[in-house]
Length: 179
Image 1 (tube, helix red, strand yellow):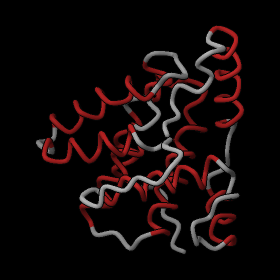
Image 2: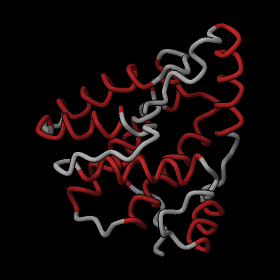
Image 3: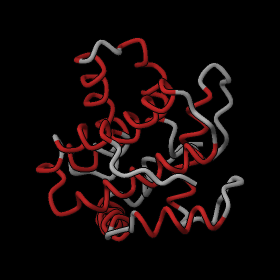
């Protein structure tokens, strides 16, 4: 597996969010790097697919910090759509939006017109599960990616936010999850 760092497009997008993300920046950045690498391990992507994955990756959880919430999917979409509009990439809007909105879908995403959505969902699950779900990615590759891009408190910080959310919203404990 080729582990790439830096990924210039990813670095360029995330630098604009560093101040908003604050002390959790390195953890989020590493999470996105892991996801991108897991996507690329699952599929040999062309240049356009790779760019879509990087863009969706950069924005998929950004709503956590934009709105300071665990219900972060809806507020993650506008920054991504703004980014696409500013770069004349609006033709990608539907697919990128679906990559963001469906990345915590529990069941497989089956619309074959957008294959990157399921790929992205799987890659996030590989990272979220700490490699318990592999989808065919060799364990050694997962271990190498995790070593290169350590957790840096990402899951711990999400867990803290989720605990606070649960106390306030016990009937909606995981608003980002979908069937």
